[in-house]
Length: 346
Image (tube, rainbow, N blue to C red; front, side):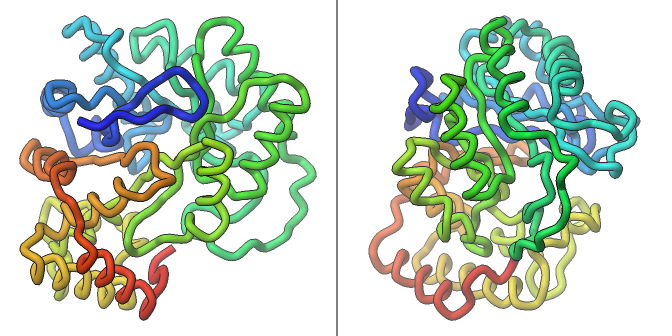
């Protein structure tokens, strides 16, 4: 296993991070524990979750993902071997079951969220506490263009950062991060931290894969120059880049088959690009999923690649991507496909 420094902190995290958003929806508690056991056994010390999980978000399942991780900690006694990351939900009336749909990134909501997460996770601290998405209205969750609107009611970034600082001082949080954030947002958080001597953001968790390289446009330089690396989510574009959905196939247990909300990467242009990436992998004797994951992990601005799976076989394949070294011919092939069809899915 490879390990990388988390921002400017003293924490080293594995180059692969276990994503857990299927725990409680597609995976039972015992299946979740089996995945966690396997990850820890191969050296993955980084686990990512969120108060909102599992996904799709439902009132009857919300919090189960953290709960399953908490019961695993209790049964295995391994909390000190894990770098645990979770997230506080941003605003959205589409989550009426989280604090009555009035969740904001303000003091009452963040404090309520962290205390509930700590209880479910059966721990007294979070290693990396992340803002799941911005409080203000901006472009995230698949929206590439920015449409300026009145967001004067949004919680000021400084207010949010001051609350997080108090959690750090209280010992509930070690480090802080952002997610689904823009270049402007990330730089503002970094500037405010410096100006007011507040905790510095150590990571940004955004989507990044062969079908969506928008992170490279404005955020990659920030990630490197400011030592605030990417925690890449959806590295397989919800499984699309494995090739299993090509030619109209919809495997019964596939995420895109089961949940319409995951259709983000299955438009016509994305399918055409995926077919080319799969053909490239096969030309070089590579597993398409492993090639896609190895490429993400190898990018210089990536701190950790968040892999998820619903079966142990899938997880083993994803972990095996660490053994793949992409030669110049493969990289050239990837760039050629990207040039012809850049970012076919947001």
